[in-house]
Image (cartoon, rainbow, N blue to C red; front, side, top):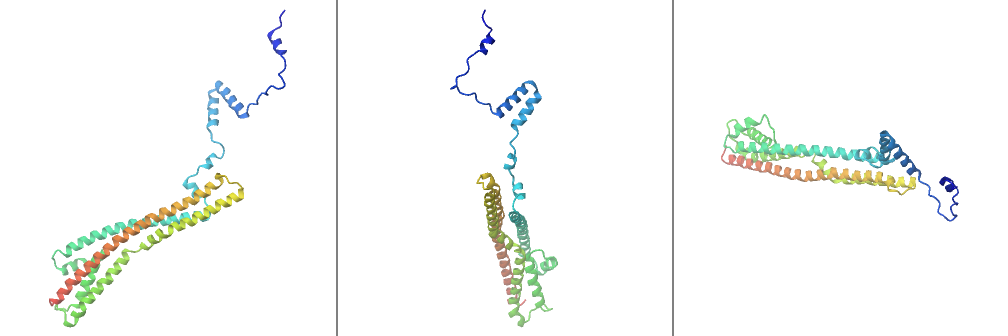
Length: 288
């Protein structure tokens, strides 16, 4: 009578000694297989397995950092440099916006005053209208010149022969002093823009050098030359350099542009004072 198949299999000869050994399945594969087996039985198990597979490894979120993280995790000196550069940039933009708006307003006021001055009306009436509310440098120059003129003119409206020789020079001197004083007020805080434009890159470079020094110090302490060790410090250092350029470039461009516009406005005031001085000289020659 023939033997059952199961009994035949149990009596199979042993595996030869030289046959390759069965490889051990990795533990991670076993866990994945178990999760897959559970997924076939329960939808909830499928969701759990998906979450485990999709979840990033521990510490992966620390590898990605934003600018805000670089600021708060920076060294104290590097953070101080960042704050200094940010404050300088904000104040520079405040000055730039103020100067651009003020120059635009001053040019409009100068055009309106020149139109009234050259309209052919009486200068005395113009003086009476503007000397109590001087709102721009050109009006100030005209007001001080007319005030000096009136002080030197006698009650009869005539200038004595002794005063004619010095009155014109005195009025011109008063106008020049007024132009200088008014331009000094208009040009106020321009030096800050020049300082930011010239020194901000070097301040940023100082922060960069300090950050790189900290990065090399971290390498020495950890005895690990991996990029993950030095990347945060180098990123902070380069961020400080970027802040220095962000503060310096607009400040320097704005300084050059606003300085050129201020020079044009100053030349406009000088031209007006020269023309008004010529009018006064002609009046003196005519005997007033």
